[in-house]
Image (cartoon, rainbow, N blue to C red; front, top):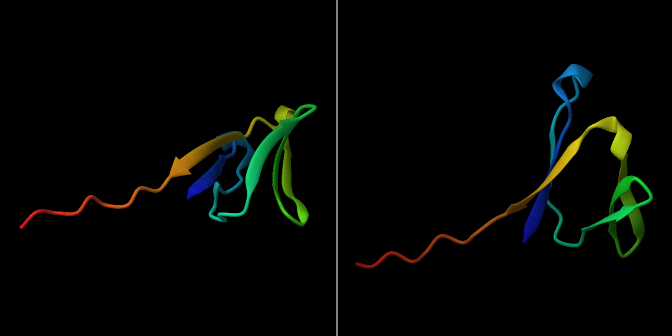
Amino acid sequence: MPSYLVVHPRDQRRDDVLIEDPHLTLRFDAGWAVLEDANGVCLAIPSGQGARIERVDVQEPAPQEE
């Protein structure tokens, strides 16, 4: 299940946000990063804001041998 980490430039003094929702998709449209689900847009960030969005893949731990 991918999660998305939104990292704001330090000079904006905003908290970074980890978004963990398996139903969200990320797309880019006319200078905007848009996170949306089946009901529509949940979050839109303009490219000029300088924020960075990173996909975070959570992996299941490998089974350990006995």
